[in-house]
Image (cartoon, rainbow, N blue to C red; front, side, top):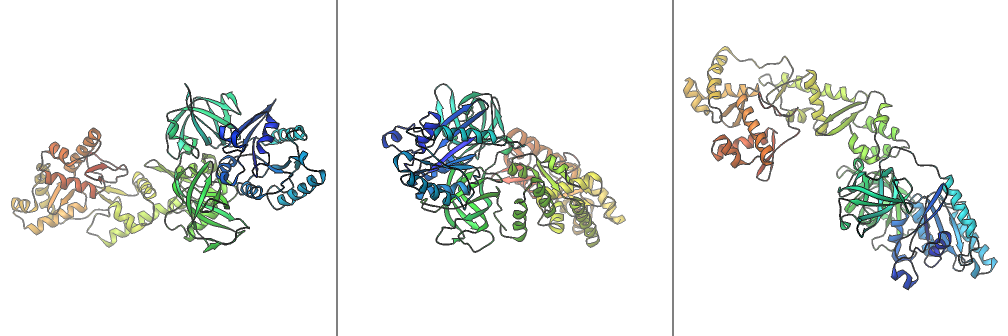
Length: 638
């Protein structure tokens, strides 16, 4: 069990921890010289079958940011109040922070009882009971101790050990997460990070990642609760000796996580509560200081539902941060004012990846409501019911930091599809409705444009479902093609039996044109040359070639220049080979490989960009992994 202290400066937090554990948590020379805590201190108390880890925090108002880094992830709070001073400003602020962080278990301790008369002790106890009465620690014990004499310390130690024994064992499938609060180099060992294990399990040899930066690390050794160990689990203080990063690549506020949980966010949606003692309402886009896990960063608060947030009330917000950080669904955080002088609000992360646009739309607000439901199964079921374009399972698993296979297996008629490394889930009937929508759009296209073979994929998306996400559209199209519900000829999609009819005269002209185009290989004749060779009017030749292009039998690279599907396929394979060899397709290399002039090489590469086979990146062309462009040879895409 992790026990965190809280309370006003000079109320005896460090002295109490030393009396309980025998460990002096003030390790810095400055702390010993000034007689106050400046940084986080750590101590441990172990008995057979149970271990306590103590995080001792500074009490000075200038070090509340450090207190917040230590308070994140504690299981049990010790609110310390000196008998001579009684309740003080930092007592109240620290208690507010504990409540905003969702700490439900703890007790208050009245210290320095040997410095005052018994009546004063009783009065302070009554004052503390009244302070706790309205919050999450209401009804908690209020102990009395004198650390210097030892009075009350054995009884408090026994009570804490009993609380640790009664603490439920953390269970679940969540991946490992450790909130880093210290990073240092140990001579001969390399980088060491310490922190509280928020979830999961880690053992020596595990491959993990840092969040939000994504550096891969390996665990060489670990200490759990100040003991050499082979593993550590949720609720433990842990020190990991890691390889793969330097000390300055992982700092306080970062996370060490299991690879599937790695995430980075600069905006997240949340529900926050403004403290009732605030003098004014919180306005939209208010600048704040955000404390999440052990991280601290400036941020802005975008209100999603209201024009302002009144003291004591809750609302939905989007937090937009100045730098990337790691966060997950359910994480607690605290907000302080722009000057970082007082705590003003706190809340809980709902979606770690907030929408940059349409964040106040009704559908988005309904999604956030669903994400606040009590169980994971209820949240997933609610999202599936809301999402006609499917739910990104990979993103959802990262958000919840757990696999969702078992959850989905317990829901009726869930369709799972995978495309371009993205796994999507569709609720009952949603997938079939999407298939029917695309097939019906193609059928209507045939009726509206009888002279065309069918729409291109991009045109079909614009016609049928312009707002649908690209992965969902491509996955559905792949399914339709694989099942035979749709067919594809070159760049065109059509119903399997659909053909564009040519007249007998046009068929005869095609028989003359196709050999001439095929013989031209990389440099086919222009329309005017083909018309002369076949003794046909140029306009008629052009019309027939355009009809063939609609059938996918030829491709128009530029006006009046057509390539056969087979020759375009050879060029497409050549582009693929060049990218595999050089990392990209460049005009000069493509020109040399084809023997064409630079202008023609650029025209062909721009054609590949236009049809979605490649993507222009500065002066390079990169093959698209999700391309739907396909030809007779060298087919790519689905």
